[in-house]
Length: 101
Length: 468
Image (cartoon, rainbow over all chains, first blue to last red):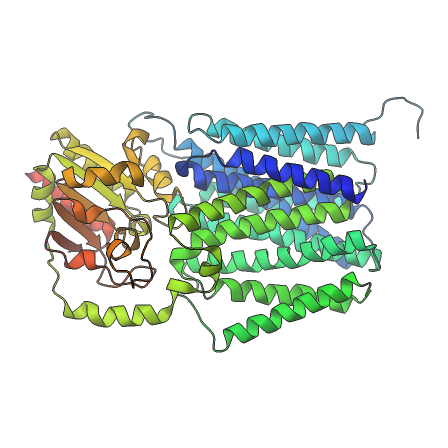
């Protein structure tokens, strides 16, 4: 893909980001930050693409770490967000469940 | 390789799956707008991520599945238990940490791409690559410092080194200098490592001098940074999913950062200049604090005031989070409501360490969503409030922000708790808040202080109310 196509996508996607986000109420800011946090874990894909061509122990090691980091970012981010949002249920049972997960 | 017209490795199929992933990201975020659909939104976005990862695994160039499996397994083994076991009060640190590893991944990927190609990349690849390396590295280290501060591994107070400005300028100069040299075509890996290291130290230096009160702004900004660096890596690696996913986060993080800075009446530049997080202000405030008389109260007195009020407002802050007092607070509110007292919660946008921090904690304690009132909604109600119970909140209730033009926080919107009939402040000690500024609220005639750990104090008041 040529640079200008990529820049076009970049600029348009930035505006989508602004528009989608600006309507989130205060209350949901922490979960929102956490969810977007998980989305930038998409950098994991960069590790997946590069590791095929990587040669040498150091390159492979660095990429395995990068993939592990990206996975922590994605999996942890979405799970933590879910745990936060689980609590926004409207008046569930008065007694809390024993273990949240 | 083309015996079939259709192949799973078809680049067009992979692109199409990426498009599907973008749609899921955007729809997911839209659903995150409303409390009722937010949880679904999070999962829609997660499905989008799964699609993006799956599509990438199909790609012909993707390889060495053993190593990929290893990385994903390690990441899952670390990430899942961490996310499952983290306490609600420690959420801000966790977000900082997850943000940090994302930035770290960007920096590592940029480094390997540089090593793989042996430098000498075309200009339109090396520039975004260098940008990704710098910003990813800053984000990784900055987030780690933010984590350490919130986790109280490092002191939450601003840490200022002598000659900090000069050191920062020097580091920035090294980073920019090596970035320019690399962009100009230098193939030296040493230079690239120098770039990463200077950015790393810069990341530390950025966050160290920032006080705890400003931490939400910092985490949000670093979140945006990581998004931008991921987008830059996407341009360097020619991957449209990284570009779109990264920039959406970059855009959202920027907005969130602005909103939070606005709520504190501070500019982002101000936050990073170390403004009112400054140590000097704190030192001055403490001296005065000892001189002026405050009225302290005990649990029994507080209980009587609360039980015979008709309207009580609870203004929680970080102290409630630290003491894990939210469940006890809910129990106290239930007990008061049984006696016909109306109990509401005043939520300042930046109470705690992140926007919405208090909402999350109170929701965890099953406080009904409708009772959480945002600042603009609750402020006109304070004059009709009999008793306001301030639990571990300080700066967000400081009337100096309204009255004293020379106060460092002058102009910051606050909860007007001092306008209610009576104010009971639960506090651990006479120490100043995170901003290090003395709070005239504590010396008001209608203010009484109840010293002690927030949870123990609330529990004592609760017991006293039950005994009435």
